[in-house]
Image 1 (cartoon, rainbow, N blue to C red):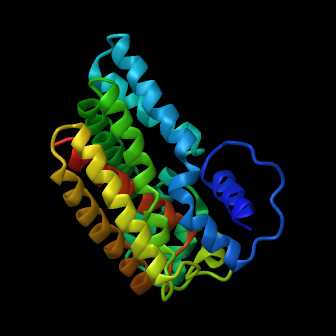
Image 2: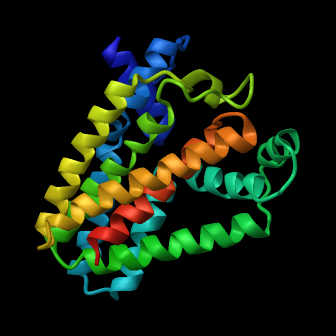
Length: 252
């Protein structure tokens, strides 16, 4: 069961081929969301390696940051970025839940979603540029990538419903116990402290964990209040927001 859940997490969250995935039940979906931080280790390692190689090649730091962001986008099929744009467009529409969900389902990007993408990509690129100034920074960046996926366990915790009757949200919503979500976030915070220690300020890891958790909780609450629950797009937005705050915090 754990292996199948890991395959589901890898196949959903990265472009790494895992073969055919069978029927997905709630138990397997919950395990997959719980294993998200582990499932993206290859992608995180690739992102860190790209940053390190760019630093070795003497590329401008901002260019290195942009390349790393591009690597993450390619390695996830830009799934989370698409979710961020759709979520911002839906929540910012000001209409009822049905209209907001219809906007999110359309898939095209409106002006609010475009601004959100520019802002998030800019923050991530600048922060990564500041972090990756050697092998330690590259390792720290990879660790933060993994930690940001802990947002999925928090967003999929028990008590948070799905906004639709179909799609990814209904499969994974409320599939992770509150205790498991808390344990996963505490573990992620511990890793963030280690990543921040590599950069010289371990206590920034505590700030990164606390602020990103608050942001994810606010996003989920907004989704529940405005949409009736979470969707796959909201999960993608949670990952991107968490990563932006985490990498920005440790880069200070």
